Length: 448
Ligand code: GAP
Image (cartoon, rainbow, N blue to C red; front, top):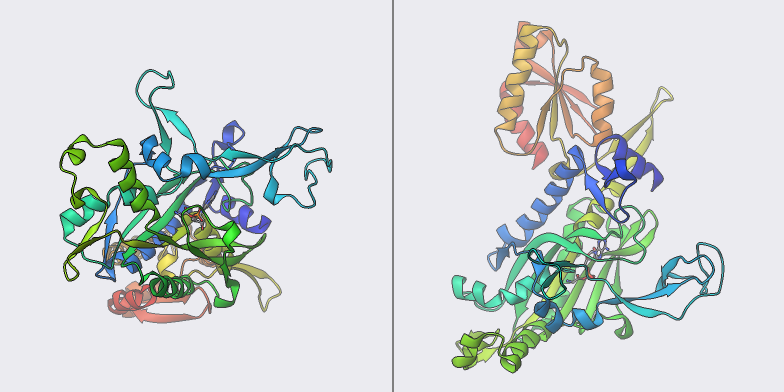
């Protein structure tokens, strides 16, 4: 983990947030390469979940959430972790993370009894902070999917089964944030709520578990670094009938990367009940019929159905950590030196190709290299970098270390002779000459 954290800072992937003021615990900022990696991971998820399927719609909802949403979802009452204080050193811990009920800070056993601590952040809404008007920062993106359920079916005419996908920030006031970006207070989730007919939920649950394992493998995570954890009944979240956690061998140990829950009709049912019981929507109350429910019409059976929900919910930051950890290696070279490589899958690499001119002051070489950069960039496959630091060997090493799949060197032969360039492969370090005219096809093949 230490090596990864150091590489991430040195090469501009991830920084401690508010670093110059001593940091803010549990918050991280993504730097120039980190933002590319994170965006690429999110884009891969969106492609697989929305574009490559015909049964999923997208959503991007507000982060600040009406407290009633989180009251009726059960989060106000139950979204807690057990908190204990050490009476000797005053440190605070999560009771379920302690070994043998010993304070990890000072070794004392003089701890308070655990008490529930709600993880939701709240903030004042509007200019007067008198406690009467507040909102929660959402602790999961899922709730806005449920509260928008009717909006989406009314505007898209969807039938079961179908899903709503969302990627976005979530906030939890974790008692002990730790392990770099693994457990943080501000993070991103990639969540799908997949609505199915009751009775078909268990088969869909199994299917989604298999699909999600395959997807992580497609992102470069070794299958044998992943394990499934069938969450026992006494550990299930308040909304879940069954959950499989996708566990990954993080540098600090085997921990949850993604949770895939069968949320039944808990959420749609609770929000429907809330509206009916408390008349939250006067208009809805006036015309109370089955339309008021967060339900969908089953035309064949001629009835309203409150769907069950299968929810694959993955952490973006944990995904970034897993992908970095899988890609990271230090290799011994024949000359006794070592090289550090991030062997990302090309679609995740922050920089897809670097174009390096052999001489940075040579007009012909520089012009040609810049032209190649422009042409490859225009293909829209991700960032292509023109870089004229002069030392080609050092350039290759630097790009190995940030995971750039190919480096393209423009030299005298390119402009004076046969219009070819040297293409160097990150993983094999093999170099070959390719005609400039063939570069776009070659590049497309490597990146896709
Ligand atoms: N909507 C369901 C839900 O939020 P969860 O298991 O609490 O379920 C889903 O969270 C995923 O979000 C986790 O598998 C993890 O990847 C990520 N996650 C949760 N808490 C996190 C935290 N404090 N820091 C980073 N990622 C977190």
